[in-house]
Image (cartoon, rainbow, N blue to C red):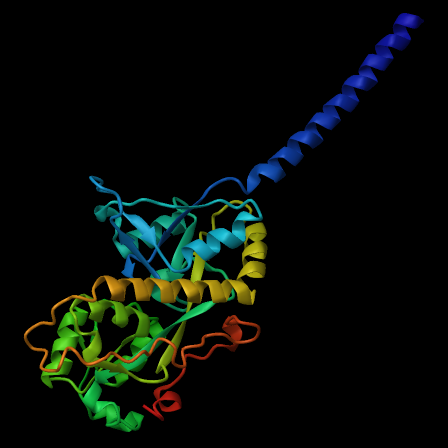
Length: 329
């Protein structure tokens, strides 16, 4: 009888231990799940939002640099989510192949996607967009007051670099203006300064950085308000395990004003550092103006992309028309 009771006791104890082990194992999986690295890539060459740069000596690998990267790492690490930027070779920087790799699940996060844009079709955008790409009208300084309305733009010669990253919606708006595309920002600046174009369209931050490379920052003027603001998203692969849990945390953190402010601070830091680095660049021969003229500061103009507590809610965002913002150029 004693042996039988002891056998029953062992049986019950074994069952309880088994259940407890299963529960503990399940808890461990939940607790450790977010430590699984989220492999992160981004826009190939569109600073300051995202680009790949060589930062390591004697290495063919390129580092991801983005104004959204460090703020994202900072807000998600408290949830145990490990964002890991991927080193890529130059051969891997084809935009279509990179987004395809995210859709397939090879990489998890993509920094710098636009809504309703074919290139990013199939990626899960994470709402809200905490920052926008402000597209401005760029002129030489003598012509800052010459353009008054949209009808005038249609009759003027406009240019834009093919390197600009814009949404499909904005691309259609620009097409209706008859803007000529050139291969590089350098060609656009040359046409502008030589009088072969009346205006240029482009991202405020991107062109501040690109113009500094050629020593042309002091020759250009930017509209005091953007013609368009294109919400810029972080996207996630739809095949990421436990996608809904990630989405819930991302949306909560990205909706906070502190996150949007941190991203904007990073943008201004990257732009300012690049301008300082190229401060001694000699302008090309086509630049006809006094290079000693003090450059005006336009980074603090009306480029505030915040709506409702410091972030953009996609449902409330309208990519603004030219008529809305040309006044006061």
